[in-house]
Amino acid sequence: DCKPDKKHGINRLIVAYDCTVYIDRVHCRKFRHCGKVSISGTGHKEESNMAEERSDCINRLHMEMIALYRGDTKRIQHFCKVYHYARLIGQEENLHPDMQLILEAAALTHDIGIHRCEEMYGECGGKLQEQEGPAIARKLLYRLSFPPYAVERVSYLIAHHHTYENIQGNDYRILVEADFLVNLYEDSISKEGTKLFFARKQGGSFAGKCMI
Image (cartoon, rainbow, N blue to C red; front, top):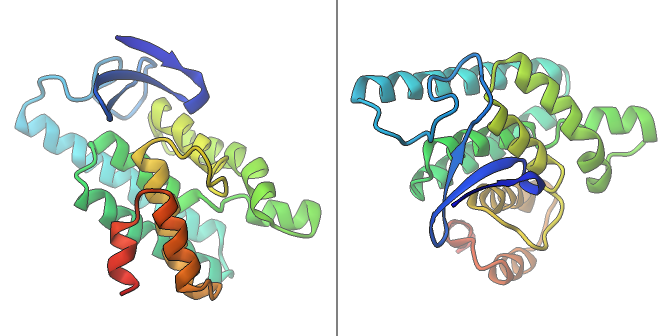
């Protein structure tokens, strides 16, 4: 049963319980699976090429984000650490490659609205970041030829990465977990508070290992 899900910025094909396969129905310039279910009968060589393309997109985004934050070493360090935690957790949980792409892109760009918030409001609280970040990320991701399904989902995640209720999707959950793991030390969040957070969200097995 394929149905649009505009709220979460994607089209979804629900295949079983909590298993979601993302579909890109809009022509994109970079990925070969445009308009098709991403997991449909691709050979090993084509899958390898697609993996290389995803990796290339992420690497270019990583360098663009470093350039965007030039001179702001603290925040470059932050999103780099969130990215590596998110990437590792996603791989350990065997996310589908499309969701892994979304997760890694969101981890790199989740705080992309900080500088604009500081310029416009003199502060960069979480809700302001959620408000200002998505438009900046969307423009950057399209310029880097990310597929539309990824751009819209990443925009959604940026718009909700400081919203800790009604977390839907493994990409959303892991992004929040990775961000908390980094903030645990950067912002001196108590281990007890972080453990309580993850316990309430029914996740955080990786976080638990880090906080033993």
